[in-house]
Length: 236
Image 1 (cartoon, rainbow, N blue to C red):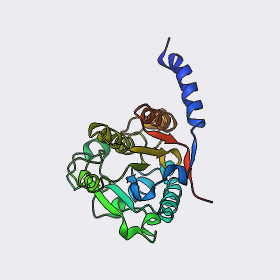
Image 2: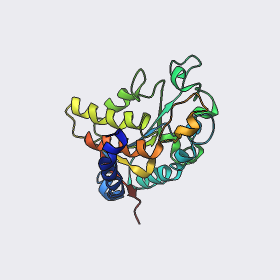
Image 3: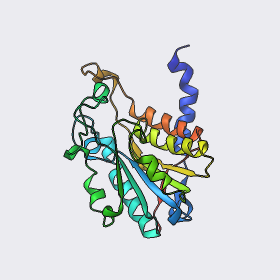
Image 4: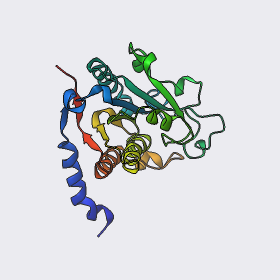
């Protein structure tokens, strides 16, 4: 039996699981907003709007993310961390993904929808030089200074790379340090790109099935104790 034939039962289950994700109200997600945070992964121009790694699929998360930020801020949440790629000109990551998100360029900047939020100047930005959120930067220091946080909402892109690394790191960090921490990933605020097998034949790139990888990595986050939900609804 081929891999495709052998996987059909699970893929049917995965599709049903994704469709049945619960919706949380803002009050359910943030019962104590002063002890909660939103942390983004790479919500920057170079992955949403322009450049070789930008994707129209990913661009669609801009409004859900900024709507969530505004609603959470209105409820009293004050800790928002923007984790963004900001590579030097000789970044080792360029060997795998090509040149992108060079620090100091428009590509590496937060999207305007975030910059236009009235509280943008009260957010913290941490730059990274790999897909991992917390290697050789100030991420862990930010966490250590906010030991009061017990709910963290992870949003951004892409589902199977930087966002996955962010959410699982938050979960594993809590486990290793024996901290009670709720990590939530709203599905409408994360996404990944798609490149078909046919299109990849004419490019120096590997195929990347966006729908399957999006669902699979969300499922893997859930397997690791992350609370994956359809969305967090703003207060009415």
